[in-house]
Picture 1: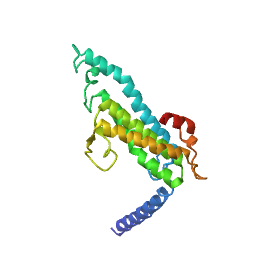
Picture 2: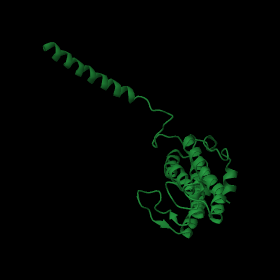
Picture 3: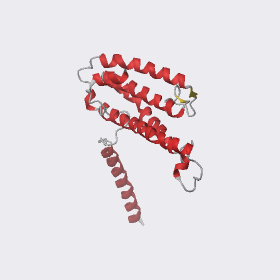
Picture 4: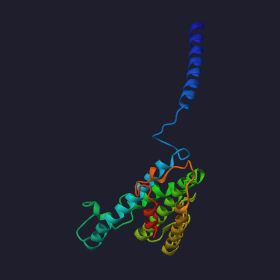
Length: 214
């Protein structure tokens, strides 16, 4: 009986030491392939934001033709026989038209504030300009595609953000473009990440970003 108690005590002690050692070992490294919002670099943030905006814009343009086609050729097509039945409908589970919304808000827009904050801390002003340009383009896309949609409360802590009018959205987007221009004219801080390191659209070419704004 005493042997069993001693064995049990030893196992408890060993497992305790092992868990402490394991915790210390796990705390040493951070996986560079899964960065958190606190440590993600500017050069890894921007290309993914660009990617998700591009996916949203691409699917919106591609599917607009399909939606219009379904609106004019809906007779004889049922939801049980053709997935395209759902194209003209707002149906979160089946509606193909929700893809631009998802990629913009979930993939791109929700990361813009973190990108701007990190760029401000680093003095990487060109990234701030790019963020405001993409923000304007994304919300213009949403207004074109869906009409009224969340804007002024879209990226905050609201679980049910209010829907703004198209005029409110477009005027806000034009204001963001005005904000972006001065950042492209500023000289970045000496150790700031060059825009070309994270810009998959224009390879850091400031002239092309300014042309895009105009």
